[in-house]
Length: 143
Image (cartoon, rainbow, N blue to C red):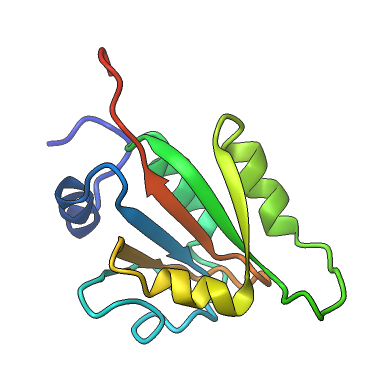
């Protein structure tokens, strides 16, 4: 039996194999989960149904499981109108001490296909631009 917030065996195994600098993509329900990442990336399917499970719920457990060094969010291309993206406000509120970067949509797809991305979590999140790319940090002494 495990102590701690996460109990998903495949997700725990993938996290244990990742290290400092490895990236995890929490992908919304519209993301191309198999073609939008590199071929070595491990797929963790948590997309039970539209709206279940969402990135917010997964992030709440994940941030208590690993150190998060950086977060990157997908934003519309420069030539598109600025839109309100509620998911981004949620992520920033959940990760107050984490550096955030913004990546335009098509460059985000390129970043997600990088060899540094070792895990993609397919979620049922239906919000626009709800993709979140996380960089694993370093475990501090005493943690």
